[in-house]
Image (cartoon, rainbow, N blue to C red):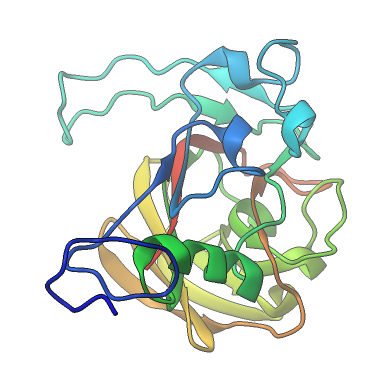
Length: 247
């Protein structure tokens, strides 16, 4: 039996002396990777649907219609002058990107537990993104959507925990957008966003400040990470990068 202070050895849900992490650094790997952390950097146009080399549709993703915006006009590593943040630009109604539906069920968590040496208790997302416009659109944004959601544009019925705006404030939408938690006043600046699904709730943060929670739903896992603009939407999310991980 491995003790608390022994070096990591073997497999399975054993306690190890330090926290083990495995990172999948490219979105093409998400569907097949055995990892604790899943990353996507959308600063490269090779990821958009029109590029045969980088087409994510070949790797279990759904991608429809979005464009790519190149970042510009920023100061060097400055948080006070970030310029125009680039990334995937969902600037037309029905633009969408949806990852493989892999996150948050027992099978995926158990797999992650073999790496960590313990069962994880939370599923987390961070991304750096902005909204280019503001309107009351609960399903125009980014976050987690339910298993069985339509492969088309994001809709209110799809939401497990998705960040959007109500035209005045940022919000986290859950339970098919009937559970909406209101946060800070909205704007068009880029922010670091976070969602943590743990226990029976999803909590969310903007630039490190907690905003509140929504209820998590049963029988609708595993979820996908998604971003996009709803069928008649105009809020235009722009997503630079995303990181999803278990703890």
